[in-house]
Picture 1 (cartoon, rainbow, N blue to C red):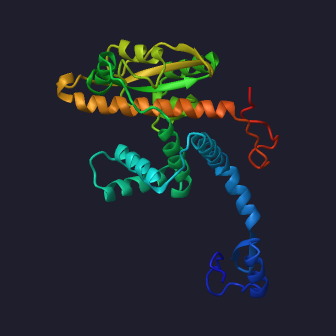
Picture 2 (picture 1 turned 90 degrees about the vertical axis):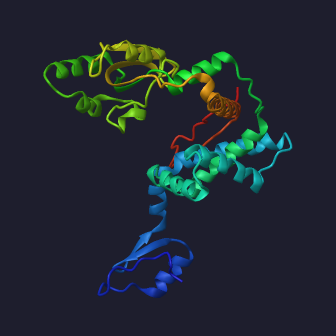
Length: 310
């Protein structure tokens, strides 16, 4: 019947039900509001514009992973899928029972505006690629020391402003001097998506941190006290020049535990990070070698190749 349709409150004008039935069956109408038909194509266009690119990228990577794995005699099985899902749930909520892990997983999906079906594309891709890579990790003493520093050594939490122009840095310098708050300037100027949702606050940083440029780490640890603000500085990388200003929010002292006392945990983290790095590298290799053309003009009006083969 018309389970996909919505009729507004009682007393509203009734739609032409035979016409509504016919349009529902051919999927051209998605709802009826006060006798007015809402068009399915409009819903699809808006949805694709909002979420289509991200989901399509995951679909593309899953297809590349399937082809790569098939050449090695590997196919996606339910056991392979469930094993990767269990690993991700354990990473999300270590030591919790499966019911609690699932609840946290569902909350994560809602928070990131994802559905279980869209996230399943990522799990399938990772399951296939993980089955293709070498999962033997040789752990060295320098790797243990670096992981120990990340987990238990001295750390810093900073508030960060990233811009792509010196002019903007000079503007916010003037506003800071005039008494405007650092947090308000984060919201006005910062381009760093990772920290912007938290008004510029970073996760705890260690001297061995790999997620931020080395210059940011060294500047954070050079600040003498909480609430100290750095001079503007610039980094250069694949994304071009970026200008920064940071404020030290919190100094976290080292944890009183020796590397030997937590060696098992350190080794587990190293293996997980190394496997994740290999998965990422393989994914980027497959993307680079593929020829991908988006034909849906709602996503790519120019139909331009995303990754032309060399």
